[in-house]
Length: 393
Image (cartoon, rainbow, N blue to C red; front, side):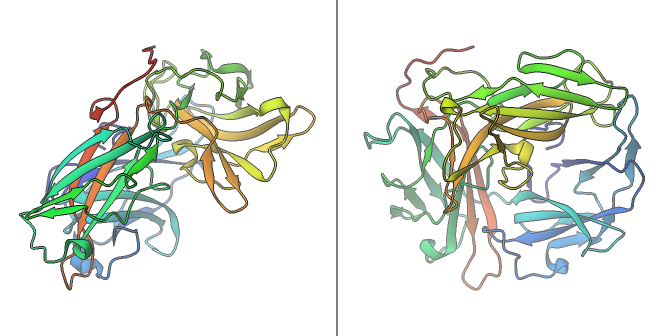
């Protein structure tokens, strides 16, 4: 969001909200970058519309604002844009993919980003509760909510209304395909015991890289040359036997800058090669599973870039990322041969998490899912339950 690196990109249809786009070209030269929008359904499949139907103005826009890095050892070109521009903006609500490409050729995609456009037409009353199930009560969060839909022309809510719930703005573990429990006139109630339940997880691990010169408490050592910087993070271990305590985190996200080494975080921040180490129980290889660095710093993707490799001589897992000055949340995730994913730490009801309820509407004969409601909840501010052993630090 504009002015808020940690804000999720949601704007109001025909409103004054704006988004900031920032990215670095590590070649350090000047290129012709363009962008366009793609309207999608609730499941991120392309909507059955042409660009004429959902973009007012130009379909392509060039990103003309850029700055060559200075002060930093690493040479790069920083590009930025403020969206939507007056000559090109979404005309329908829904899920959008921002496509950034080179030389006006949309087939030459460099990267994509997701954002949402909402046309608020539903009231959402929601609360976070402890599950009644005794096995989940101390470890999970349950979201109970209702929708007020009098502004919509609904004949069959089970077919026309879709609800998606995100935990910490993640799209890799959404709860979806939720059906209302009761229909009371214009109010849809969602309150079954087995639906809308998320594992609580634990507060994310952190790494403060806002300064490479002043090493933070999570940095073990650093190696400097006149061209590069290497940062070695203190080894992490299993936290399952460590008692839970609360501390403020960024819910898996990161932000750039925040240090004293530069004047502008976008084109004067530097990059470093950052080495991560995880020490498994008894220094043993984890059988039949692969370990990954996990969080927004790896785009929540489990791939070769985020996979950790076992060093049999040291009995540890190791991975390396190239990161810019900033503050990073992260965790470790295990994936088995069937593709099942789990974070390595235990789950706790006390954990602070951010939840987002997205309500989509597609009337009979409609060609796309409209986003007609958004509600944000925090498991501390919007919960009803008992907290055990929390400690503010």
